[in-house]
Image 1: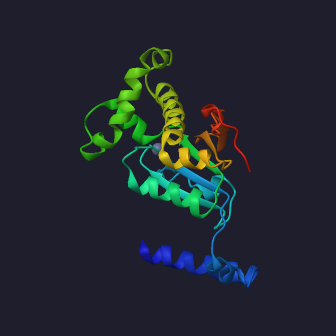
Image 2: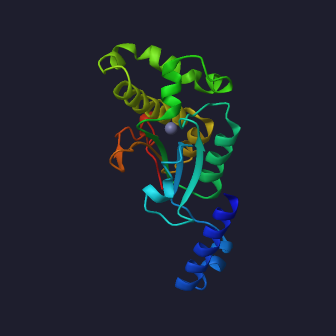
Length: 205
Ligand SMILES: [Zn+2]
């Protein structure tokens, strides 16, 4: 299997060099991505591919069920680097339909270590019981929980000291929530974007 991957890589690199001889030299100079993507580890939601983007265009953090935990130093380090060093101004949390992490959280405590990671989802489901019960149990209700989880993640990001500091100094950073529909291949904007305006401050250039 690894041999297969390495052979595919070799073909890809050769194709790129043929199309653009300076491509890899340019890549090695540095990155200037426009977006920071927080997405699920799911193999069916590769941000570059579904966003139609080339290497170098999107900075990425992915975890099971695209959760934002305020104790996740891997995510927070990437977020801080994205805003403070790379100067990225578009932050995206992207959930997706048919998410295995969401389904596991809905099933209850059966997954070992993942149960701890997914605990926040079970709490979110309990808090939104009335909303969720309007959807039939199973995929439809899970997909609604995926939406609610993205909305929650956007709000949690906005509360991090990293975003609060960025907005306080006038950086025009936006945090968006999207949902990717696996059965259609479409990204849907959940229209829950936060720009710091909710803090009562006008973002400045
Ligand atoms: Zn997922």
